[in-house]
Image (tube, rainbow, N blue to C red):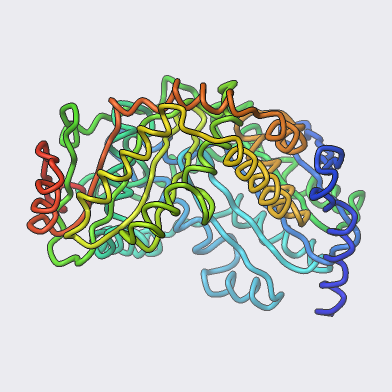
Length: 472
């Protein structure tokens, strides 16, 4: 069976994976989409050569939809959705999935909520039955809600155990402050303590609606037969308040964390005693994914800090030996985007690392970009994208991202041609327009005493310190 599966994967890749020589000519398969009378939308990625099935239900709701003063509600719903369903307790449900050799997941993020199953194609109907129970008949028992509530609080208390988690949280909160993304998934323990089972039920009843959902079917399945099973499972679903895939803007909570506000050129330092390395993020708000310069900025980011021989790695890591790893990346939401450089170093060299990184960014902003770097970056992006769509499941995931962002079906086929079309001048212009270093945000997490000494030695004099517990 294992050899058959491997052979099937090779056949599939052989059919679609020719990007190295003719990437712009290859067309990735698009889903067949249908909508049931109740508004429930289904996307079919069917391939008979792969003996596995992935089914997932994606809801158009997430952390953003936590009620005011109740951040963490979506996290708690995700943690308890599959902790007991109609006719099955937590252990019975887990055993039913494990007996199939399958896996399940429930997760939430800023804008989506997902429930999924992965298993053998011959078990597709049983997997659908179990997913239907999780999505439509969760019990949310008082005992399970309380158990997961306690576990989430305990996990949050350990946030400061790892400096990279701490600096990521502080940076994200700072750059998103004053937006609908400012709260994140979990604002504070004190606020989360007010979240009750009633809030969990209200969130579920509000967000879980057939008109607010997409059902994704990927793999080997008899579509005509499975279609009937999907219809019988979800076709009569009518609950939920959200409809037509819309999260109403007026219902979203804008949050501003004034504790993290800094003055111009001021560095934010989150105190975490005892860490022997300083974690740092340097960045700023970025243009949305819909910006005309999007692909030019992706090329810029790749040559700056995405691949191993990128500029940041070549100088900060290889030449100066200030860190083991440094990278840059964009993060996109529907209505927000950020760019950041992330790294870590000894407390005693954090000032030097930041100074050198800013020098590289200034040179970058000034147009110091060669044609050779552009070519290398484009080749890297084309090659890595080709690998990222080398299975049907990966193609479906990339399509789903485009669907969520409203980029259109063809976005998965447009990526490589658009990267190929990017010119050096377009990259230089995009960087000059959006890499506004006078608005840069710098956040450090670590032991304050040696970090402050290092910063002052590198002529960084404006530093705002906040305590770790102020973020919890």
